[in-house]
Image 1 (cartoon, rainbow, N blue to C red):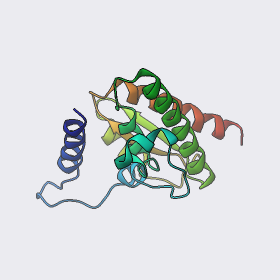
Image 2 (cartoon, helix red, strand yellow; image 1 turned 120 degrees about the vertical axis):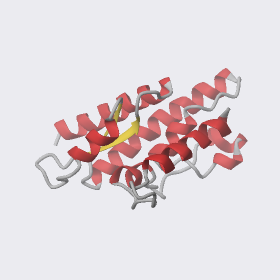
Image 3 (cartoon, rainbow, N blue to C red; image 1 turned 90 degrees about the vertical axis):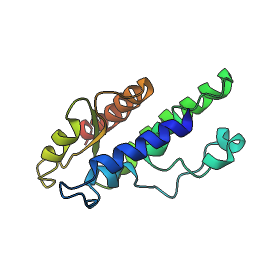
Length: 159
């Protein structure tokens, strides 16, 4: 299941990152934000039992995928889920401190809408919009999006 999910994400990114002439286009701002790694973040202690993931907790996309892990060990899954949600808040804070507040979007045509909103990154609010999914997305991603955006909005409103 996990492999299928990762294959779908990779295929989605390849499909939507091509120019009409068939050449792969340059990376978008959304791609850069989703895969931007904050190297100074410590790995989750829960991932000691999943060594392949131990060093993959520094990006938004890594953490969205980690929310999909279901080991059938309810206690482990709950602890990992809490750690991921905390990490997403932390990443939101780090982007804000870098003066690049991020708002995650989803839904039909969200990629096109974010591209339009990101045309002028020097506007008053300096917010960068990042589409994490179109129409169909895992339930946990919606939860993660709301928590991440709530943290970003809290930071923006408290400045």
